[in-house]
Image 1 (spheres, rainbow, N blue to C red):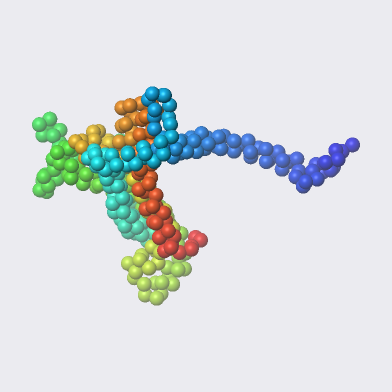
Image 2: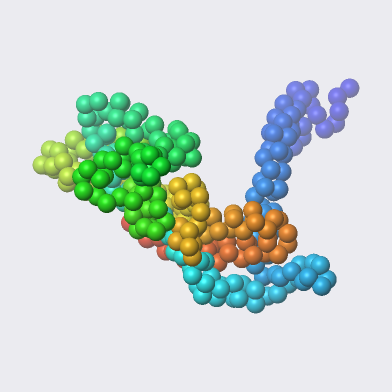
Length: 324
């Protein structure tokens, strides 16, 4: 005798078969772990980071108490009044010009790749190599190439070359911060545009050849094709690159930290993320340190969020609706 809820084919009255129900249970079970991971490792830390800047640590009662905007406004003023934190804040924004120099280089090189220049595959591999090597390893190799220490008989071939062409390179000397930052820029541009070249050239190769051939029949030249056809049609990819470039401000610390290992006097080589990391290393994860670090991150977010919103609105406005 069959159950009243299930017919002979195994189908419930609500239209769900046993097999379908088992599939739904299986899918739900698979989703439990990533959902749990998201709740614990993403949602909880981010909510905590948003709440902590509005609190303070009461040493007499030994607990975190709500302080409103008082703590946030106090720390905001200290960031720009102290030379060390002010330098760290502005050094973080050095990631922006680096990425915006990388963008046009990546577009031009990616365009050349999309035109299937001779040796394209070899060049793709050569450009991609820096992105598959550990950042720390790559930075240390670059650092030793341009090391300049004649007294210690330690001078790299890059430093020798710079002196032979007339550039007075003093090595990784914190007494010459402009030279050091220039060399850090050069490294970041060299190591950073490889992945973007592959990404942009792949986006260009997805453009239907019929559009390109039609433009050529109308007399479109090499550079006109790039400016009037290729770039507008890959604007979705470029807009993602621009947004990611702005967000790099929050994670720009590993390269200068590996090159210099010290923040220098008044934080001339410090960045905001590096400052927060060092603050935790020096003071541990006590409540007052957590509040201070969260407040610094919140201040950077306040300054960064309007720029991201405006940039996203502008890029969406100029980005055509393409589906290839």
